[in-house]
Length: 305
Image (cartoon, rainbow, N blue to C red; front, side, top):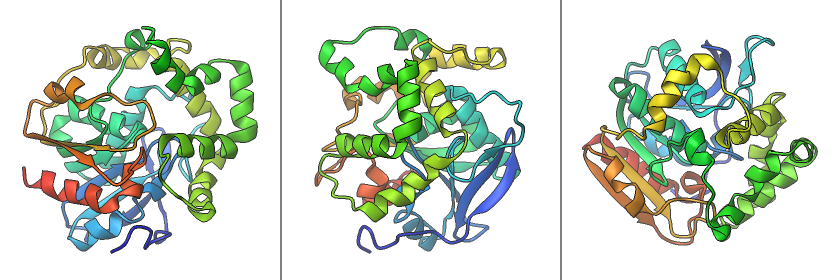
């Protein structure tokens, strides 16, 4: 199966889960081992369009949800704070698992999705059979986010500082598609994606809560936006950078242009069965879409750990 063989999923499903009505794709046998795949920003479920058939064909029940603020996922109440802090996104996925009556799943993700999967593995290890995490250990904290980096590293986070301003919010609101395309190009400089591939994902940024969630996420990281007090205890736990105990494979593309830690910086955070793989061939930040065979194989392999 070649990369780019599939351009779309079957029909989307919707289900109420926690604060959200979640849009998601489901494929594979209903009684198969569950796999939940989580996308990042500024991407969407189509990052897994060539991963899903590989896994469903191997007998897995595969779920790919739109995160809050993306695609067809909607808030159930207009009164709910449009909160993008890290613990809340993880709780969304735990609520989705409960709604779908999935007791345990293999979790896979990159970018926001990897961070979310990391957090679930820490907070609810009984729900996480195993983990595939692009760029490794991504759990953060507001305190860590306040620490200045060397100038070259700070430059890579330019968009985070842009989003800290009202000009940045207005700019993202106005130019969100152009903004996303630029991030795709910078984060995956060797990925020759076409317009149709980009536009399939960019449609998910038209979600009415998208800008609010993205801006809150990045401002919260820097301590420039408050989270909700009811999640303070969870964030305190996460700020301690707890080890991940479930079996894990971490992946990194050899041409990832986005900010990412070196594997040597996080290997010891995975205290269970663990392996790290470098995926070669000019693979950038959106690893599942750029190297779907390698990502799918990691899911299958970690299932055997």
